[in-house]
Length: 314
Image (tube, rainbow, N blue to C red):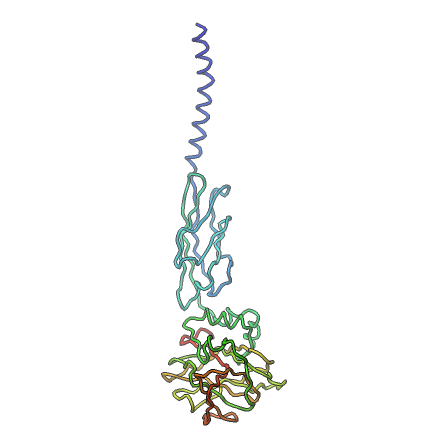
């Protein structure tokens, strides 16, 4: 009899415990995790980590968000609060694509759901949106403006269809001394990279040995010849006044080249930098002229332009 009551007492204590455990498991399995989709619009060229929107969930405590797929890959990220962020600004280029899509995986315990992301990209003036330090000057000037080296490099990397013309990066950065030309001279290198048909010249860099000596009108100007490396050069300037050293400039060019190959030159009343290059010949003339009637071997003037066949500005 004692054994029977002992068993009964144990059974009575055990049954409620089992019921409590069973109810707890049922509650966890019954979690109905729900999340909103995100449909939004963004102007092209946003900054990294810009917030594109947020995913709403019905259970925030313990919820984990992650990107399970995106087109293009790496375009966005998602933080622990469900905010969708710009991860790769270059993915938001209207000339390359008009939308970014993604799927966000949302997990809480054993419950999983998904959020669909659809971000439409709208067109903008790419020069305006990609410039930072010099943006205000660009907005208030119709001609060339001086920009930073960083801005020049961003445009070289981010403008759709961009090509570098004139001196290549390899020759521009060659580890040899920078020498000095005479002043009041128009020059062009024979081995430089030509401009493809339909090119807009929107950025320019060169090495100035003396700056513009405080001349308020600048007078230094890039020049372009359509079809001939030695004749027909027309000014695309002038550049604003600037100091000595490597200088960088941007202009919202509205005229595209019409020849299969066009060529870049420069005129300056002041001296410019050049490097010795045994593969190069420099064509030149004294004064600001259209035809280059002289040549000198082993000289490469330091000029480079950025061009594109796609006009991406107003």
